[in-house]
Amino acid sequence: MEQLDPYGDGFPVVVISAPALSGAAGQAVRQAGGRVMRAIDWPAVAEEIGRQAGRPLLMIDTHGAEAMEVALARIDAVATALDLPVLVSLPTADIDLVAAMLLGPRVVMLCDASELELVAALAVAGATNGGASMLHGHVHEGESERLRQLNAEVARIAEVLARLSVQGEEEGRGGVGDRHQSFHAATARAQPGDAEIVRRMIRARRLRDGLFGAGLFEEPAWDMLLDLYAAHLEGHRVSVSSLCIAAAVAPTTALRWIGKMTEAGLFARQPDPADRRRAFMMLTDRALEGMRAYLAALRRLG
Image (tube, rainbow, N blue to C red):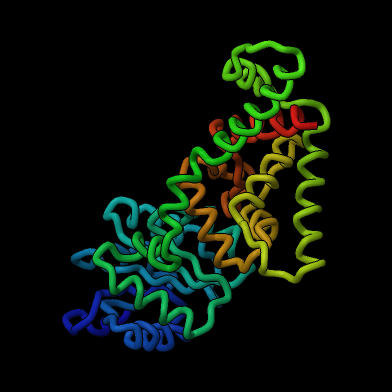
């Protein structure tokens, strides 16, 4: 462990990295307007993490690190207990391990980030009094409002579709009926063939990218909802890295949205009982109910 600048100007940062990378990490912190209170090597994390005063940002670089499981678990415990914001710079190969240990609302993960992206993320974290826990809302302005709407979006769309379809049926038979009751009756359980319908929807969404070019139709939240629901119907488990691929966006963007969907109560993390270095993502009961309602409404529309 190396003491660097505990009393200088700038927002406080504790750097955790391999010794060979601590200099570059410290430079990024200073370029972002911060100061490195401490630099901790991975073997010293269990003993040294949490000894500093205040509420610093934990900046973690997993590049070149080995045997991180215990250290990451310790970091998560301390960050949770002290409500410390966390920013992680990691390679794609570390996604499952880091997400298994650190995925949460106070954690921002930058995957294969450039030096400029890292400095920018640090600057945003330092510019907000809430630290990295606020970084989610500032990286992309307006996403917080979208998240508040997302909780009810799937069910709301299904409700609209169901009303339209029920209205058409009632007009055809001349009745009135209870549309709300009919809607809920149709969403009681998944139907045979739903998994194939969802997989076709996913393939159709990727077809758009092939015809019009990648990046024009990015909607990672919905892409991940579809993938997790199809996996649920098929009885498969989905790792964090696989879900990032399903999101069809850059890994950093996908990881940010996984965090947001977890905060929104739609995704849940399920540890792998056979391997603590990996976690699976699953839909919550609320999300499953919404997806069943959506598929039921689609069936009503033919």
